[in-house]
Amino acid sequence: MKNMKQILVAVPMMLCAGTLYAAAPATTETTTTSAAVPARAAASNPIMGDAQNQIGLTYGRSTGPGGSLLSSLTFTFGPENRGEDFNYVMLQYSQPTTFFRLPARLNGTVGLTFGNVPDAPSQGIAGISEDVAILHWRGFYYGYGLGGAIQGRVTKRQNSQFFFNAKSFLGYRISNSWSVEVVGIHYSNAGLQNPNRGYNFFGLTGLYSF
Image (cartoon, rainbow, N blue to C red; front, side, top):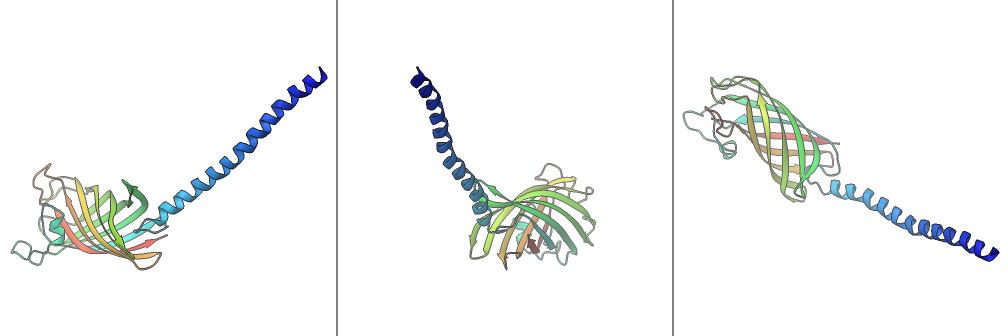
């Protein structure tokens, strides 16, 4: 009977010790793996590197009214657009993300249009968008962005306060912190209201990542 009691006490203790021994390596491996994944994901973003924040300042010059992103990348010199004095300054804050496993960034923007055109007075524009890097090579990257924005008031060129924006960009990372992009930006309401002649800007963006 005494031996039986000793067995009944020893078996549960052995089982507990074995369970703790088996669980310990699994816990260590899980912790190591979860810690390594964010580092690899951040380092794979060609737009921002391993930074978690980015600010940018954009200056763009109007390429004239038009209904697509191509309008912002094409300079036309017809009578309607010759010498159009219409400009755009935009401040951007971004954080890294992914889009279907492609490196990307999520942006919040505030901007100001100004110039001397009768159908597009100076006003503020605020929006949110996502940029996706389609190609990247040795510090260069190229991609597209889509989002939504609100302008301060309706205009003769754009008869709605809410509209969509599309962007095409070619960038180069000068260092871990600094990069520069050539951008084409298009704003329009996708034909939901008329007139919808769109805003189109071609410009340059300076960015600081941290």
